[in-house]
Length: 324
Image (tube, rainbow, N blue to C red; front, side):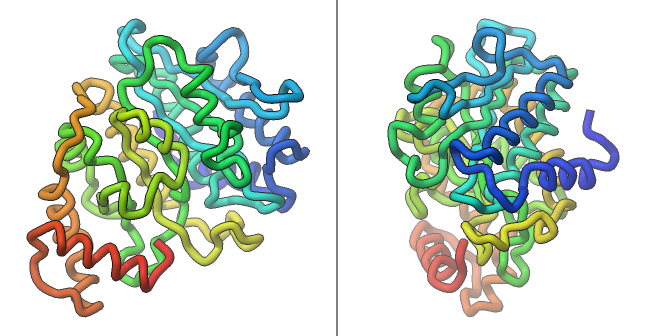
């Protein structure tokens, strides 16, 4: 069940996690946040993914790194689970409200939703360690270690990864946008995204992952050809800065995204999502014209977008003018 005061609940999670000393691997803040996440999962009576503990330590010395992984049991325990992932560490001694306490807060509230909803298949909630430099795309990266060492034989049905999902996109007229990459990983994503986009507060903006590269924990799933989606509001002025603090986030947007994502997870758990490397051009154009068209016209990119090179132009323009 989604709390009626979800915006305030999300803010409380973020304020608890996003302290000035940060959550860098090996620090007191890192240990404190790990304890907090585990306590939240315990209170929801979820099942540890592996063994008797939500923590799955790795690396030397023992316990230096730890993924935190829980399962909301589904009706079919033998089916491949749907994975929802977000990293909980920070880049140095920084508060990391948007990067990535916001995503952790949303994932915790999704845990609450699916702890009592009896999903069709297991929903695995993975709070990954060591996503930030110097661990990014290194052997110590938590999502890589989960995939290569900790994931059970069922693999995953699909992976949904969240990073930088707490702020308004810093482009006038595009504040409600949520960028989505990975739609090209399965022909099923187009229908699911079209069926879950709300009337307001969140606007999907799907683009090819190759435009920006695998900038977060979806990297390992993309590299191995899995179906996946990556959600982000993009980089902004507070990215990897001491100014990435809780009061700068849009908790109404986060609450709406949590509710929408719960619906998307439920639909994804019921659907077949083949990793068939689909051509997502038509669906990208649909969302581009619907959600970005009016704002792009004010930037001098007017008209109806009809082909891949139109998307190329829009993406290059946004990347050159804004930190998205």
